[in-house]
Amino acid sequence: MNINILKILFLISATRINKQGLVPIICRLTFQGDRKAFSTGLFINPNYWNSKQQKAKPPNDENTFINSQLSLIKNEINQAFLFLQVNEETFDVEDIFLQYKGETPKKNKTVLHVFQEHNDKLEKLVGKDYTIGTFWKFKRAKQLLKDYLKYQYQKNDYQFKDMNLKFVQDYEFYLKSEKNLALATVNKTIQRDLEEWLR
Image (cartoon, rainbow, N blue to C red; front, side, top):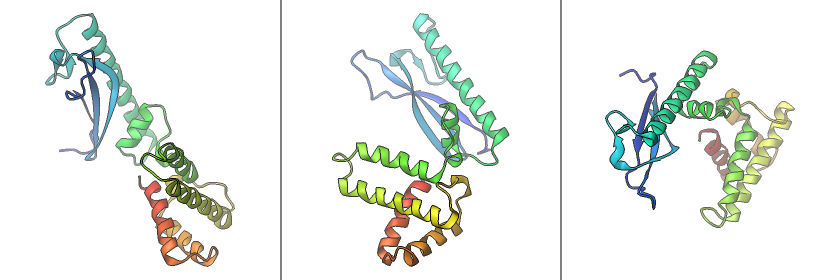
């Protein structure tokens, strides 16, 4: 099996029936052994879905519309995939999805931008999935990283694609030597950063 081939699969989520008796149609991308599933925004009567052909049947106005939309989605995903093949040396299934959505692939973003995206999402979940204390710890972790970039590179941000092991090791040394942080605090700070960089 060639893992470098992009597989696009449409399927229904049969357990998520809405009040109209319709289920969502999901698109699942598989590339290099990794998967990315997302909702197409389309709904269908499960009795009208042909899982083998991945299309709506029998032919009628509603099913024809659904099939045309699925075809459009597939074409746009293939265009995104082709764009990345031409313009990027390496990319993953998440990059394909982001390119399809018209968003910047994560590797082309900056480190602090990725961190801020995470913190913005986390802030909305305070009191639900996270405590305010956790949120402030991630805010501090971002500020420490920002200070380091200014100190080490005289930059306000850093390209995500340029991240490597030496960057992490130098940052760890900075936290110990310049910020006088204890080893346990350094490890936790690095862990929060890595959670974002490898997410």
